[in-house]
Length: 214
Ligand code: SF4
Image: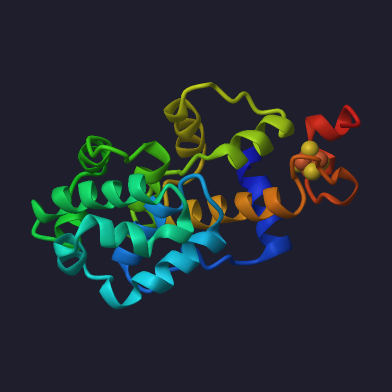
């Protein structure tokens, strides 16, 4: 079995399913993916509560951008993020505000178009594709780099080079990619923190950093 799959199995056995991504609709997940940039999820949740009555693409697209910014204030960088949401909606309107149309698109083409939206970076685009649309791309974030770097994996600087490592070594399945990323975040928050708790880590027997007595 590939080592990456072995690590997944240990994390899953320990933590169980994470039920990601929190969100009642695909659109709410997209908005959450944009709002979560540079802030904690608890701040995003407060912004989403404010937005709930308006969480339809056409309604939000018609809304004055200053009003939108006011609603998402708890998520921080609210003027920037309001414009990012507006940019996404400008693009999404060209698709008839239809998630079915996005889901019919080739993943690489979809990714390319999302990355063409001002303010949508690779992690955000991949979160939208994986969690919003249920398509298999592996989301890379700072937690992934830190955890797997410590475990002894080569972590190239380029986002896509890291993403391809996971996508090539694992079965390309959206359920697996969804759960794996969520488990990485969980383990990184609870155990492999900035100051890692190696003494209580389920991955310690397989970890380069623990072996060096981190
Ligand atoms: S053993 Fe320590 S460094 Fe390695 S994964 Fe666990 S917490 Fe992180």
